[in-house]
Length: 220
Ligand code: SAH
Image (cartoon, rainbow, N blue to C red; front, side, top):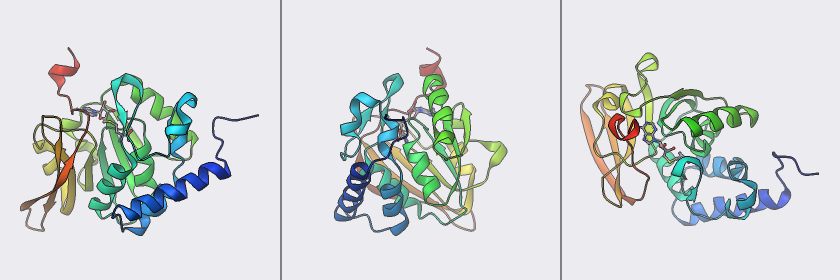
């Protein structure tokens, strides 16, 4: 009998290879590599598509969204420079795979999703797998003021601009990683806030994300 949470030797082996590929592609953070090796990505896939789980590719999930490519997840997580116990705000829960990687790195996570269907699915799934972030169904442009400030903020959809609420909710010394751009590709952008509150921007190459939608687009 197969159970929905089966994790076979073959799947573990495929994950080891995926972590090795991340290393070859330039990921050096040991905690990130370990998280890629640990988090059972196949459990975020529909059974019919299990064979795609350990390829380094994005893949369609519910509600016209995608589970991010493993390399993108590893790259964004590495840019955050997580420390154990960091309070992390994530915008775009989606499948919850990136959320699980943050938790596996020792972060505490507050995650926001604006698609009801995905929010419902992932809020049920992650705790069953032993991952317990704080979930919100809502608009990531607003951040999560009740739990601010955050040590780190991660946006997993392509933003047309940097939402001011997010830089406001970042702690001094904190890091915000956000793909910015409205076209086909987005610039991976790292915003750091120094102790005096001054923001500095660094660009880290082009990536491809589903768009971060605003209230108007989403309420139709
Ligand atoms: N980290 C996710 C990526 C999902 S794709 C994963 O690995 O599965 C990006 C997600 O951002 C989608 O689920 C989309 O619905 C969500 N999203 C888009 N605009 C948003 C907004 N304004 N607030 C919160 N989530 C948003």
